[in-house]
Amino acid sequence: MVSTTLLDALKRYFGFDQFREGQEAVIRDVMDGKDVLGILPTGTGKSLCYQLPARLLHGTTIVVSPLISLMVDQVKQLKAAGYKSVTALNSFMDGQEKKQVMQNLERYDLVYISPEMLQNDRLQEELCRMTIPLFVIDEAHCISQWGHEFRTDYLKLHRIIDAIGSPTVLALSATATPEVQADIMEKLHRPAMNRRIYPMDKQNISLSVEEVHSPEEKTARIVDLLSHIHAPTMIYFSSRQWAERVSVVLREKLSHRTAFYHGGMEQTDRMLVQQQFMNGQLDVICCTSAFGMGVDKKDIRLVIHFHLPSQTESFIQEIGRAGRDGKPSASLVLFTKKDHYLPQMLIQSELPEREQLDIALGYLKRREGQKIPEDESIMEQLQLSESQWNFIKYQSEESGVLIDGMVQPFPFDFESRIHALLRERWTYKQGKLTEMMTWIHHTGCRREALYSSFQDHIRPPDVPCCDVCGFSVDHLTLHGLKETPQAGSWKERLQMIFHQGHPHA
Image (cartoon, rainbow, N blue to C red; front, top):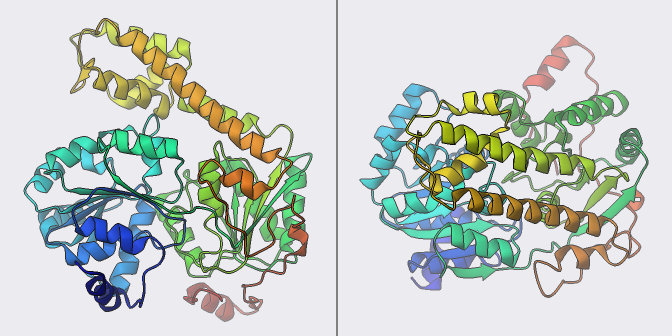
């Protein structure tokens, strides 16, 4: 398909006159039937790379998406733009709605599905009967970041791809080191993917790191900063309790409309908070990493990290949510000398200790020839987290120790192999945390240090660079929020509650 035809389709279906950097090259490859690994920065329109082909290709494009809220939001946006032939299959749907979609899957051009939902036998049978020209993994870094422990169904995607006829595969992400890129291609069993890698350093974000003495001092610093910065802001936490606590303090001390968001909330509450933030009805959101992936809000100006992520890839993803409109934005990291303990604890909850692994393997050995109980029961008996058990279960399935829940005789080298893999994962995760801590304490240009693992050349920023290079977050004059009038009467308050505001400038 020639470029002019693609431009015509872009204008007809999406109203754009030209492609953004990387989009056309990825789409041309996909239309030519080539497998592609596309790394395009946050905010550059990665979703168009499969949404346009889905319009042009014959059959149904499958998109593997990590979060229900992300799927729902993208489907809602596409339908609002007039693209009706799109749906999402997820656990949030009621039984009747899910049944209706399943029976009519082939009528859709574009179907969003989670990796867990793809393990459903009936769904796989349905997909095998359909014409699927393109299989997309959105946020493909999740394969490497989550697949080994937390969500091992990501590592089974290659089986689904083979089962449905090996369609063209497109893996998309905003951040991936060469190491992670190789891991994605290996886990998808697609070693010859065409790599379309674009610079990840966003030139409109200023970087700043500040050391404080306590979490309370972090909170006070945020209150002081936001008292003169009136712009859409995200504050990231690794603790649900701290996200809630700081949210309460900000509501008490500032006029900003503030809410919290984390994975412990009800799904409906999470989706409500996300929609309110998207629609400009919230100014500040105190959230864990569960929030933000794929959120297409153009005018976020400030991203604050109350806690440190456990790896630089996550950090780059999270600060990349600021300034999607290309306007000046900033990132602020607040840390104390003890802040490495929390990400260290999170790593420990994701991987089993050596002793825990030995206990779990002994448990499986004693049940040779028997069917194991449900996951929840095993996790309770062995005192394992979901991620710890997922690691052991997946490796047992891969080695033939578990087949359809039945325990088989251990291969002679199974125990040594799984112990070696555990040591490898511990070393990898500790190394990632060390990279993050090294960056925090780096004394040179933060921009160069942050992106040097991802790309050879760092572009000059369009904004003040970082605190090492003279930038101060106190000098920010970011604006973007409309003043919210204080409603006096119950009628005015009711009107504010039900007013569907538009995103603020």
